[in-house]
Image (cartoon, rainbow, N blue to C red; front, side, top):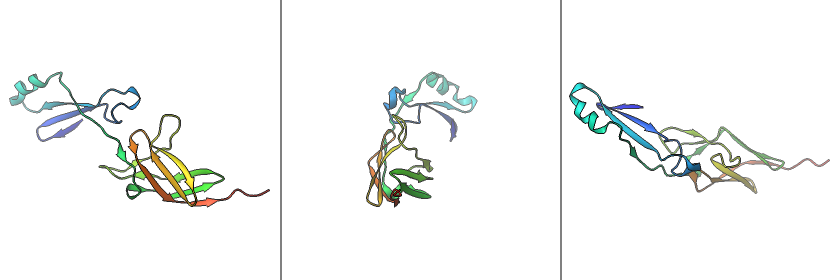
Length: 134
């Protein structure tokens, strides 16, 4: 719920892109403050307005992280965040149908491909450690 200039905005189902895993469509409702707005509130009572959430583009320039390491084929990204919106969002690796990105290794780079709430590809440098010979 957000309070704006004289009215409240209440959001519902606004965390995922439209169509994500059958989640309901994002919507919002409005309520004006003050006794003078009784007629307006009565007109809007029980009404909600749907809107669209589109996936964000996953690009290298909008990513920050503490450390990227590839060791024995396993990718570890510490503190990976996306800063393309109002506030930075911590990104999670894809596990099954959940997560924000799929990761692959190519030379000394990690290639991130956006999934679910993200689309596009970003390439980041990484330390690649070869497996120890026994």
